[in-house]
Length: 196
Ligand code: FES
Image 1: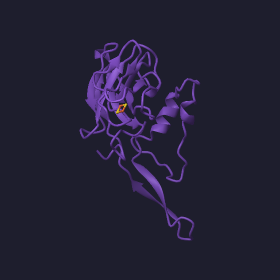
Image 2: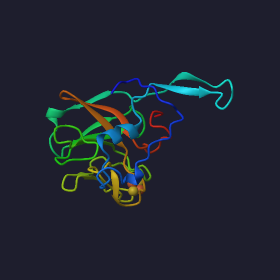
Image 3: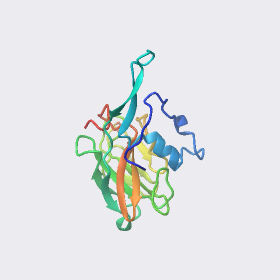
Image 4: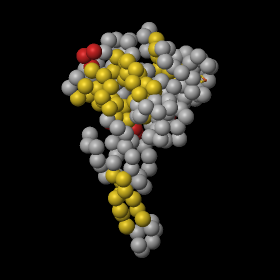
């Protein structure tokens, strides 16, 4: 995907249908996932003086997610997460990339089983580091109130107090290199993922 695209800010946001689109199992298609994540947008056309005779479209720059090398596909082992930070090194940026060994929503690689997620519970910010479970392909239980997230289905909540899915880090594969290029969902503690 190009780093620069034009789009209208008046376009309605795409809805994920409460996670019920795609295969009917809370699995978005790759295309839906890319579109919904809203990543890699550097230039937008902004309508100035909308609704008046002076209305005009002008280009406006917006912040974009960085493209960050986080791992080598060949070095990943099933059920062994690797830590990284994204989209910056600020608060609540801790994340993991993991090869699940089973097909996953938003997954990359030959088996579409490599996914990445922010590592902070969406409920009240409990640390999820070290809680990955290979037998259930889940993250949790959160040490504070036991929320657990399904990493095969875009981080949807399995059980516990949280009511938002775990933010999924959008990945791209370039040869053997895995890049983080965006985040699907709001990271705990931030009003904007790019304002760490
Ligand atoms: S902070 Fe994780 S369940 Fe409450």
